[in-house]
Image (tube, rainbow, N blue to C red; front, side, top):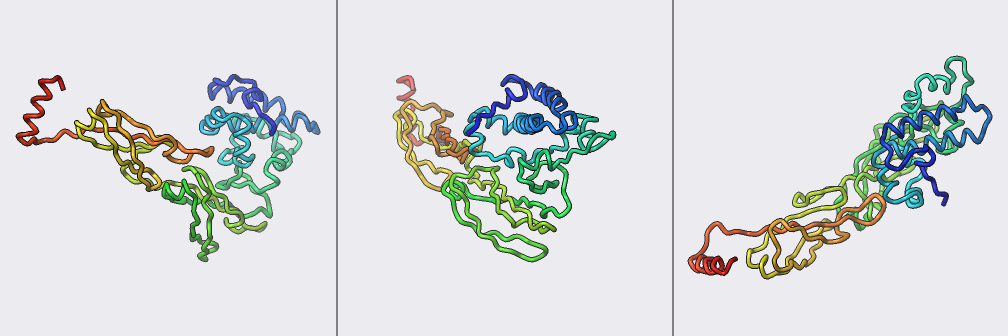
Length: 312
């Protein structure tokens, strides 16, 4: 798999600010603009390469994933369509100001087709607003628009995978679709179902199911990590104990609480959190709270006084 160093492509450092990345893109996009390099295939490929780099580095989440996992793993999991999804190419040319007009035939310049430049990347797919494409353009005879729907899943369904039946409306008619949920899919990921979007002259678009996780309200979520509170007695905090802890997929595990555990300490269960964007799972944290009874029996009070005398 070819390595792609997006920072090197744009000529910026890895810690470059968004403004520096944007500035570098503008300069290179103008230099390799198709209207300035008519018939130059090398410049055309360079222009597409620059746009791909900008599509990733200008998106905070894509950039974070690229930085975290590196080029090879990033491109193993993300197609060109994934890279440009939700990325408005038309905004690129707005950023370039008058050059955008030149590209699409303004000011008397030669008309360079959007399809000519980006068709190879997307396999000549139609590109339309609100679809999985990249800009605000559609061609005559294009497929129908893609449809994006939320797909609520329990953590157990996301972690272990499942089969679900969903209902959609197509041209006013109900349609039931069987969907295979891949194992380990994370929140925010999309499942593509080809040919189940809106109808159009060139056929139906695609259906994208946006995964949203339904969590037990006891769990707090921080990215792919989750946290839950467990309350133990003072004596167990001093001497140590074992507790049962629920996990996001509906199972229960036993966890050892070491002696001398303080109130608020967090214990970790590795790999028991939510699925991540690149496979694997986050962690589950258990915040230990100490139960202090509001009322003591006479014997408990006497024992507590003895413990206080002993320095506890």
